[in-house]
Image 1: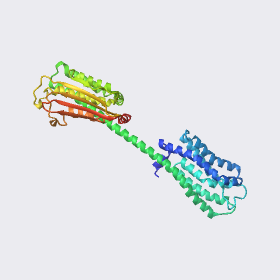
Image 2 (image 1 turned 90 degrees about the horizontal axis):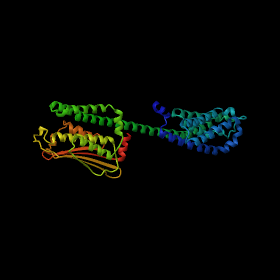
Image 3 (image 1 turned 60 degrees about the vertical axis):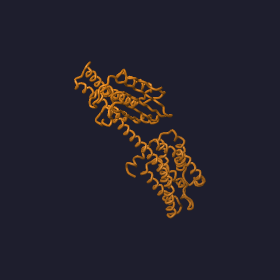
Image 4 (image 1 turned 120 degrees about the horizontal axis):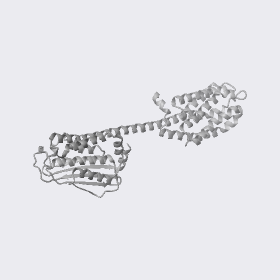
Length: 426
């Protein structure tokens, strides 16, 4: 295992913590069961070691894991790791001090110290408490001490049997230690995947936010700054239109500095009625004679960035109609019309449970134009209408027109409710 991966063993995310607590809860009863199975041997050979050694050994190998199991649901991970470490260290110390703790000349040839029947408790607690680079050497140490104690504690030297005991211990205890370490590693893998997913979502959200803000700035530059410069360049400033447009453009540019306010507004949803009122105010401010109507409004909420995109795209569509529908653009070679009728219709629908569809239609009976002749260089359509709508997930815009038959601009947004919530949370 690499150093970085080994160091991550100390990091306990939500998944790792749940797995760790589950292991501690299960380990306590398992240790008690081990003790119960070894109870006849412990009772039979209890008097072969001093009580000052036997009683503390039983406490650290049986009582401490049981206590950790009881407090595992609410105790901190640090506390539980400490208790598991106490069991592992206490068991190793007991193995080291077995020889001095013996009463008499030693244990009969046919018997073995009762503590050797609890080796899995010490090694498993080490695997739960410590990183692999410490747990595996601990398993090897306990296996070696098993053979050494088998030799030192016996009345007669029995090297062959001691070697067999060491080999059996390392194979048996490695199974439980490996399961514990793999479980913790699986939890860390899940936590790492979750962290990477959150980081990716954050990067996607940041990229999307930058794209939306870029589209908004591009639209502002076209709608306000370039429009003001165009009015000034034409020299047609009746009624101070250029000055009014310039003040409005400066105010909008200053508003961009209020980053926090803009960000909060983007993420705060609004009621569908507020959306319709916003669109109506945009229509009235640009052309009071434009007929505005809407379908019955359901009680739903709409992301504010969608409302902002719809309002700005609607404003550009109306401005284009006011400038060009009556023949103001000589590029198409049309004669001006005496009167142009405009209408805006808004439809907000709950399509199915959890799905919302919004459609804003801008109509005029002006001179129209050939849409195939309008390239990407026409910022009014590409940036201020299509670009603004495509900057929000689920948004789109269509411009339909023909020379002599007027123009229809359709602004649409459709999104599932759960995806709306996900976007806002991101």
